[in-house]
Length: 368
Image (cartoon, rainbow, N blue to C red):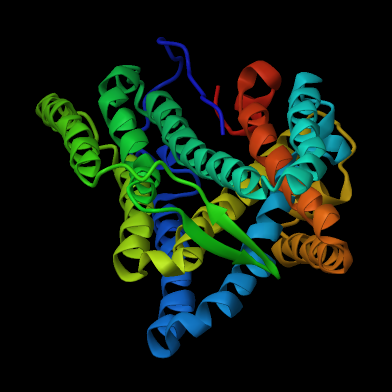
């Protein structure tokens, strides 16, 4: 997700309730974060603690079918329908397609050279980068909403150390994995090795110290803002806390040999979070576009009418079709499909949530 910013000067009176600061509402956002965290923890950890490593592969299949692949549909739901497609720059589609097809073209070469491990590692790293971008993108949206609602553009500068803190914290899992020997992962009948530099464990301490060092200016800024009587940025903190817990619990409970389940836990949190955000965005965009006289496509009509289950049903249908095709395809073709529909989604999200690629984005998000 991209960065949203607002001008330093805002028009209109500040909101005394602060209700517009939250994505949905305070109660809904807090429930959304708690739900997104609780579902993967209960769904995966209960059977894993009961059955051990033999539960990992079935649970990973649950994650792929009901979380990961429906999540990929959400980017298509935002960009491909007629109501949304016309709003995006050509670059939003051309660059992701070019990057993705380049990686897809490398699949047969990787198969011939025995380099699938490296390709699998590259796609995994792009995926973790994408998750980090989503979390920090949502934090920046909260910056923009806070500035608009409370008429306080100082939030952008004051929260910068916190954004950097989150950036380092959300990337510590990569550092953790890189202190281990290469991890073997089984995807279907294909075995991969997740390559890592196998750095010494003291590197983790350096990363943790660097992360904690950013807590000092963050706390200092928050205390100063409190003395100045400015509202506490609770949405920022709730998002960061639940995201951080999704990583911490996953890595604390699941040992390295069951790394697939670790991925399933914190990525499922990311997936549920994104589904909620996209549904909220589609509802806002459908109302705006209806007011402008735009002919709404079926997905936006459903959003306008609040028909969540038909919308999510399409996502599950997409998952069934994609996974079905992967299962019946030869290994090289199957891997090419996995690379394509993962990487193009990762790359497109870096464009479709930036105002420079969609002039109406702030309007569709309810921002001035």
